[in-house]
Every structure is written in C-alpha cells, then in structure tokens.
Amino acid sequence: MTISLPGFDIKKWKSYADWRLLIFLLLFINVRIPFKIVALLFVYITQFDLKFAFRAHNSRIPLFYLFVFPIAVVAAVVNKNFVDLYYVPVFAWALVCWAMALLAIHQVKLIVDKTDAQTIYHTLILFFIINAVFSAGNLVHIMWIIKSINPYAFMGMHQRYFINTGDDVMGISFDLSSTNAVLCAFGVFYFIYKRNLAMMIVCMSTLVLTYSNLISILFLLILAFMFVFKTTRNQKSMIVVALMIYVISMVKISPQNGKYINEVTESALRKNRVEKKDQTTVQATTANPGTQLLTRDEQRRKFAQNYLDSLSTIKARQEKPSTLDKKIKNLPLTDNGRLYIPEPNTHFAEFYNIGEITPDRQQLIDCITIYRAQLPLCRIEPFRPSLPGKITGIIQTYNYLSSHPLQSITGLGPGNFSSKIAFRAVGAGIRGDYPPKYTYIHPAFMHNHLDLYLSFFSKNADYRSVRNNPYSTYDQMLSEYGILGLLALLILYMGFYARHYKKLSYGLPILMMVAGIFFLDYWFEQLSVLVIFELMLFLNIKENTPPDLKTKPAVPEELTYA
Image (tube, rainbow, N blue to C red; front, side, top):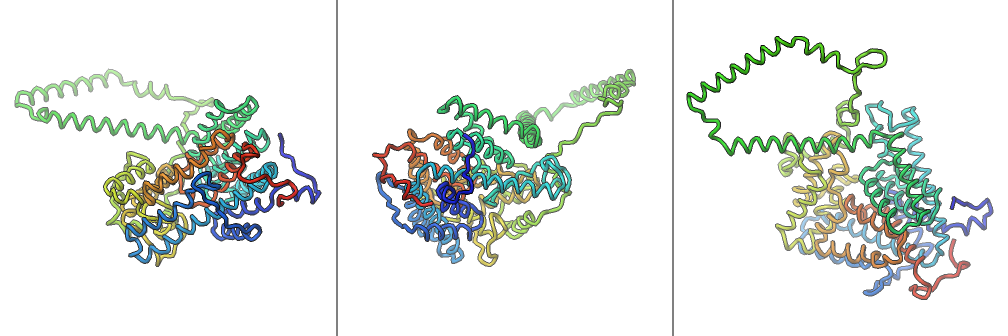
C-alpha cells in the first residue's frame, strides 16, 4: 500500500481524516505547556464530555489515572511535605500534569469510539508526514548554517553538530530528539502491520536521523522479535527494508555513531580490566606483607641479581643498534611513499569543543558550588564512576527505600526524589526553567538523584549521556508513589492493555516499546508520546473486537465528525 491522498475536492478532504484529532495531536505533542493547554481546550470545546466511566471491571480507560491522585495526596500528608510552603507549587504542578494526561486519554478514547478506523488511519498518515517534514526542516536548517550537505560528518564549529546532529532533529514536538525517535518507532511498527511500505520508509528514515542510540537499540530488538513472531512474509520483507535503512544510514551518513558505541564499550571494558588488575596486585601485596621484609643476605642477593640484569640489558642494546631503524622501516607508508599517520578518534570529548563551559553546564557548576556540602558524589576527585548513572540511580532508590520501609509504601510524594518536576524545581535549568525564588529541593533528592546527575552532567561531554541520567518512569513511580504507585503502573496501566494481547497486532510491539522506554525518561510528565501510544492501542483493540462485544455500538460513518 502506498500513500494515497485525495485531490482538491473539499468534500473528500473533509472526510479523509479526523481533522479535530489531527489538530489536537499536533498541539498536544508540542513541548510547550501553553500548546498542550490550548489542545485540551480546543478538543473539549468541540466535544465536551467529562463522563470518564471508571469501572472496577472492564473500565473504559485505565484505572491507573484514578488511583494516582489519592496515592500522591496520602504520600504528601504522611511525609508532612506541606510543612515547606515551597513544596505546594511543586505538588500542585504534579497533579496538574496527571489531570492533563487524564483529560487527554479520555478524549482519545472518545474519538476512537466514535470514528471509524480508516479515518484514524488517514489521520495518522498525515501526522507522521507532518512530523517527517518538520524533521527534514531541522536537518535543512543545520545544513544552511554549516554550508555542508552532511552535518553528521561536519567537524567544523568545534564539532557543534557532527555526532550530535541528531539531537537537533526534534520534529513536530520541538522536544528532545528521543521523543521524535519514539514517535517514529511507533509509526514504523504501525505501518508495517498496515503493510504501508511508503509510510514505513518515511517513519524509519526520520527515526535514523535522530541517532538516539538507546532507543534505536531497543527498537531494533523489538523489530527482531517482530521478524520471528506474528508477521507475514510481506511484513518480514518490510522489516528487512527497515533494517537496511538503518544499516545504510550508519555506514554512509554517520559511521561515527557506530564507532562511538563500540569505542565507548571497549573503553569501559578496558578500564574495568585495568582496575581489576590493579586491585589484584594490591590485594596480593597486602596478602603477603612478609615479601617486603628481607634478611641482609636476601637483600645482597637481590642487589646482585638486579645488577646482572642491568648488565644484560646494556649488552643487548649494544648488540642491536639497528632496532630503531628496523622499526622505522616497518612503519606503514601511503601510496606516495609518505609516512602514514592514522586519523585521531574524533568522537571523544576532547574533540567536541575547545574547552569552554556552555551556559547550561555553568548553571550546574553554580548549583554544585551552592550545595557542595550536601553533594557527596560531586566532591569526589578525580571522578571515575564504575557504573552508568542510570544503574546507579536504581541502586540509590533501592538503598533509600530499603532503609526507610514506611516511605516505600506510598513513596516520598511527587517532586521529592525522581521526577521531571523535582529536577526542574532545583532552578538550575534542568528540564526547564523555574522561578529562582521558589526553588525547592527535598533532602533525599539532594543526596541521591540530584547529586548523581550533577556529578555526571557538570563534567565533559563524554559523561553527558542518556545512559548517565537517572530519569525513569519506573523509578519515579516507586520512589515518589511507593510500591502502590509502581503496582498501579504495572497492573492498572500496562496490564490494562496487556490483557488484550490476543487482539493486539501492531499494538504488541508498541506496548513492548513503551515498557522499554519507561526506563529512559519521565514520559507521563512529558505529556507527548503516550497520547499516541494510547490512541494506537485503543484503535488496535477496537479493530480486533467483534461488533457485538464492543462496549458501545459502532457509530455510522455518516455520523462521525470530520
């Protein structure tokens, strides 16, 4: 199937897609909160409905959104968070984000119930085309700035772009490139099962432009799963095409990304081997302290042995005076007979810039200066972490809750340990601006995730990576909403869709993708990709539910809104 768009017939265009849904998605996906508010106002004005219809059995939308509010309130009261008045706006904003997410999913469910699947399919085609156009616009803008056809290979401007070019391919969300990558991954899965090769190529081509490594690895693993399970021969062919696009992009457009992953991995392994060897040597010396205590005869014998070894070394050097000449002769030469000098590894931090401190990094350094006495990791010099920051963050959460068992039930409350609003309320420009005079930092957050984040991201570019931030939806729910919050996420949200696994086609890999990306960021607070996830899952369930089993009767096509 190819992209098929109607001509200039107004009636055909009016019925081609759900324009209200398209406008809502384009506005709500935008990173700026005013756009999200406008999106909700627009969709509720055009279709006002507040009948959420939560039910204990077969609820129309996940009960997770109903349970998260009382858990947040109980956690804040139990922990006496409101004693600090600066916590009030932090708590209020957390509830506002949950309320916006609830209002969004309610409207998405209404639209899926009232609109035929083909119209929503056309709407998603338009959405992903618009996103691809904006992503291409990001790339063209960079090309215009650097006056080069391939920014991924451009090493000028102190490598402002080069391997980091994908970070500026934000698409229609104007958010992090990882948001764009996740959206495109959803699109690839969706159009593979819809057998739309052209749109699959559009989404896949946009995804590779972001070069979001962790998301790409997760995406490729799920793509491999799809190839083995639940796909036809035609769909397997499309998966092969998707993989070819990825491989070609890594080889021809930005080979530095592949080299970067390999060299970072090898460097980490090398470092671990050296550290292990050093520790073994120290342990051996410590275990046998008597080897350092020699008798007078042993000392004289040792001195004589060292003297004879020195004479042997001098004699060997005199007998082979041409060793250096042989080494020079064995050096590789170019075709012109010149000495070959290999190019340096330009994807490491020392090649990224000329050493200046960027404004965002300076904010982090200033924050460390203010709170240095309360940041144990930031005081360690030299900074040589043995684990990625994301894994260390999980360990921090586990250790804290293990030592505070009562807080582990309902958590520390929103904004107190691991969330977007917690980082933002620091006032250091992390995840957005915040009024300096209202900054709020919970002590547990200060000593754990904030300390961890600052210790990595105040350093050079090689530390400022996604693998080193403690962002995680699972971590957020466990630390701030407790075991109850994490169970609500797994059972009442993920389980809400997973129980329909027999009805899921493209919905299954998309569900797996969301389960994976929950390790990478605070996606509920992002208020972006999950609205597309929820739309696609509701749509997939509707498509594979027999008409007599649907909760609502199908609406005739002539009664659906445009």
